[in-house]
Length: 329
Image (cartoon, rainbow, N blue to C red; front, side, top):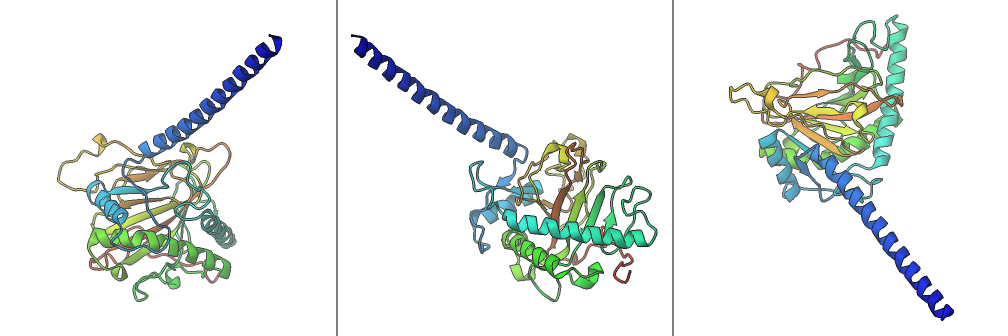
């Protein structure tokens, strides 16, 4: 009897452990799904690209993304779910890491040049504008680092190295080229569908990096321009957190029907992962928020400005006016 009772006890205990393990796994899976759902709820206009390789304008996801941009003025291109290969990403982590290192080294070099002019490179004393770097925050801490467009397209119309003054180093150019090529593979079919044009007819009006350091201030909601036929593409080079000051957008504000209602529109703040993409119409209200991260993490993202080649928007003098160069310092 004692042996029978012992065996019964062991069997019951094993069954209990199996149930506990099953419940823990289920709870873990549920929590992962819930976390991903909460993340996606912050960017309701979402499309999941089905290919990281060469894509074409007939892809359904590209058409869906174009429709989101047409109707809502914004779309987020994200990984399918929380269990996806996060190291691969929409744009791989290795490509993002190389680009992040490239812009960090370039900004260090440019700040050294600025300091040699007797100017405060942090921009805290006074914002400054050079061809290679722009201080975009009155208190410093936020920098725009333009780079040449190196991702293909019509060579006669792409941004060239003369537009951004000091040339990139060999290593920086390699990293930026790889990133731009990956961005173009994803964005070209979307823009082609949106503007009903061939991918070879797309223009790139500007490209670069936005560096948002700890302590930066929040921007005001603004439009990058008043005209149709232009897209902003943002690629975070790290996983975004609320404290890092991610970009906030107001969907639908790209449509001018004469009714001012920007204050009534819900603000959306996508918490994208490294290598995911936020794409929005140039007319959509948006702002970069202040970086309040206590861990002293710098938020760096790559940007590309696409323009419909059939429109008059071949450049962006509104956000990138003429400036002096640091090339000969």
